[in-house]
Image (cartoon, one colour):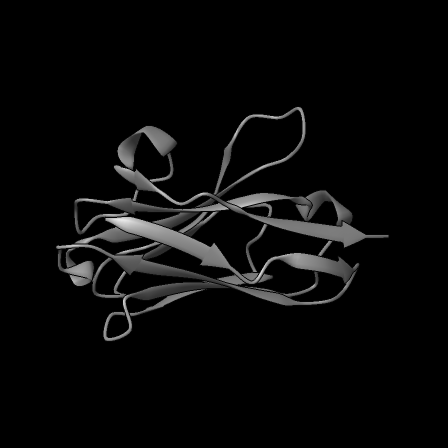
Length: 124
């Protein structure tokens, strides 16, 4: 599975961005749970959000609950992260990840495939 993120950029605090992650490869996208993680400079990679293959389950980090929404379109092999009310502390490289399971998990070791990341910068 290959994952390619897009949609990052520079935005002012309070603004919004929508990240996309396109999956490709010789596999059925809908068989994978998908997650978003982020890594800020000098910090460890942290969980942001995850969605099960059938959209029946989502999970969010406390820091983004109510502001971020994860979704997926299995017909387009794409997962999205809608980010609203952005804060400077949301500045990080955002990574998409795929897990060979229907169940969501919030730890990075549970994911099998990773994208290259897209940079989100939120100015104050």
